[in-house]
Length: 307
Image (cartoon, rainbow, N blue to C red; front, side, top):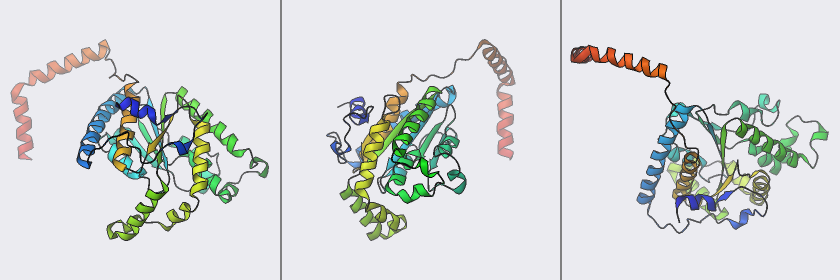
């Protein structure tokens, strides 16, 4: 199975018939490789991503927005670390969405995401995102009551209305040159249990343990139902979801890198054309630099040595 086929296998572009339970968190598409081989494959993907990012950054035509959603311990942070480690930090920004501040709560639920969007030529990574407003807020209705909404705005249709707002928001971004990739790191309950126990039992990982993760685990079924509904209502051809098998970190990292590369390659990104005026300026600059000759280079080298 080729890379494009693997990406397509977990890509959701239409909510009709979508069932989260049909996706196996331990799926590796039959790949049976050791960690060293997986690391080499990932390095190849990261190298290609670096090349594509350079073209994206130089062209200033498109921006890329990557959304990572998952249950706790699924590997959002490590995915960002391993997949995006080799790209130019000037053109990439990671935003982690925690509990909203009072300022953020005084605006509409998409406001803080709007303030963090990547500009043209940039990659923006949302570690959690505006989807928290139809996930954690739905699982914990008491959070909705703290948002200062009028009672008549908090009726039974609020989640459908928020799905409508999200779809409209994403269409607006796409129409203005933002490429959107949404990833749900699909972790099994058994694997989450293993990772939580590892954080408790291994001293070097104790710092990662948060009792709140265990509290949220008690709402596992409610979260799965909320993810099912959110993905089904917001998946589209232009803003697809990817249901990433996350029980094996090596595979989830490979997949995310492959999906980003696949998406950018389809854009046929090229370096911007240089106009005649710029070519003439470069020709004059070249003549000036060549006129300095080796003596100029020697003086520069000597100056560095003397310093």
